Length: 199
Image 1 (tube, rainbow, N blue to C red):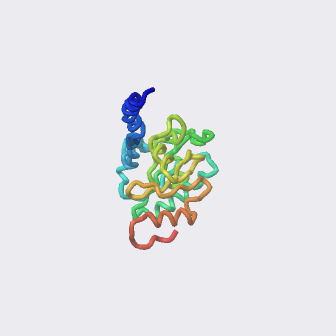
Image 2 (cartoon, one colour; image 1 turned 90 degrees about the vertical axis):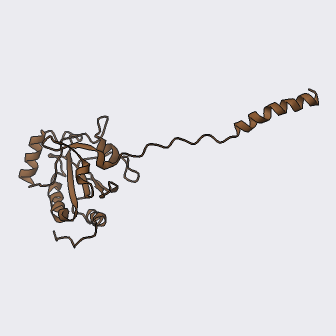
Image 3 (cartoon, rainbow, N blue to C red; image 1 turned 45 degrees about the vertical axis):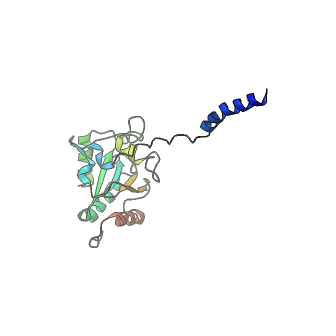
């Protein structure tokens, strides 16, 4: 190849080489996670609502069951609710039959069981799926929150959510509601107020 031909070839190739070294276009930003307060839920009595009804409150969201070894934790959950409810705290219980069929009853049966045996007064919700293909959107959000991600492993897993809808704590089934770790996390997430009443 003659020198002029080589120069012509290089002249044609240079723009192509320059283009090949251009940085790739920036990736499209991923959609922000859906705010937890927008999640639609159904009360144990069948009334549709959303978590916006508790916006500004600290939430302890728990998947519950009536025939589980951890079922007595209902008592501790009610004690927490009574202690902190006047400071903007609420327990939200979501019955689930996902683990060995330990919540087989109807919503009416679940409500009666909780109120009769454990005298619960915190909100109960319609039975849902907390894992699997039919996972409820609430648990899809909770279990994908960075730092707290991972499938729910058993009944009475507890997620702590602050008043702005941020997940700020997760506690496995074996951690009782009145465990110091749970109480400390709740205290940190509450707005400044008077001292809590003793248990």
